[in-house]
Length: 359
Image (cartoon, rainbow, N blue to C red; front, side, top):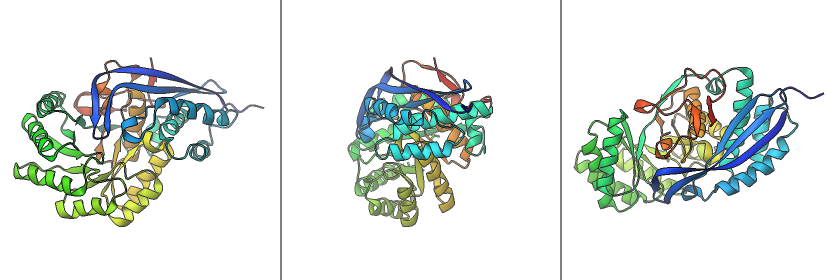
C-alpha cells in the first residue's frame, strides 16, 4: 500500500530570466539567468519546489548539466518515502558528487519544501528555528569607479547597511572603486570579495591602499586561491582582517580542514555549491569549531534565495548574509517572501515550507 508521503513525481523545467545588468566577478560575468525549477509531488498531493541556478563563472556548472542531473537522480527517488528526508539527501550526495551542487540544491529544497508544507511548518524550523528574519548585504560588482559610486548610491537608498565589493582586477583600480563606494555610502560596513582573482600579496596591497584612505573592510572573502590555505592564513595574520572561505569550501572535509588550520575565520555556505545537507552540516561544523558563518548564493531567483534565508534564520548566529542577487533580475518569476527594504528577509509570515513558488 502506498504511503501518503511517497514521492510520486519530480518535474524539472528549464527557465530563463533576463537580467537588468550583468553580474560580474573576477571569474567572468552573467547577463542572463538560466535556471531549472523542480516540482516534487507526494502521494497525498503535497508539493514542493526547488531551484538549480549554477553560475558558470564560479565553478563551470551550467543549467543544462543540472537539468540532466536532476532527471537522472530524481528517477531514483520515485516511490521512496519523503519522510526519511535525511536518507534521501544522503542518496542525493552519493548520486551527485562533485560539480552537482546546483542539482543537489534543487532536489533537496523541493523535497524539504514538500515535507515541511505537509507538516505545516516553515522550512526554517527544520534547520533549528532560531530566528524568523535575516538581513542581507548588497553587492557592488566589478566595473568602473563611476559605476561603483552609482551602485553604492542605490544601495544606500535601499537602506542597506552592509556593502560587498567585488575585487580582483588591478589593485589600483579596485582601490579607487572602494573609495568611490565609501564616498557614496560613508556609513556602510564594507566587505571585499576577490573570488580568487588575487593572491595574498595583492589582497594585502589593496588593504594597505584602502587603509591609507581610512577604509578598513570588516571581512575579506577568498583573498587567495581556493587551495592556497597558507596564503589565506598569511593574509589574515598580516592584515588582521577576517577571511571568509568560499571557493575554498567545497564540503565537510574542507570545513574541517579550514577550522583545523586556521586558514579562515568565516565559512560561506551556498546551497548551489554543495546542496542542502552538506551546506547545513558545514554550518554545524563551523559553529562547533568556533568559526563564524556566512550564508550566500550564486545568481538565483527568490525561490533559492528564500531557501537560503531559511537556512540562515534556522541556524541562527549567522554573522554575514549575502542573498541579494534577485536585485539583478529584470523581473521576478516567483511570488512569496523575498528581499525587502534594508535587505530584510522577513520569514515570520511563512507558515509552511519556503513560502516562495514560481509564478
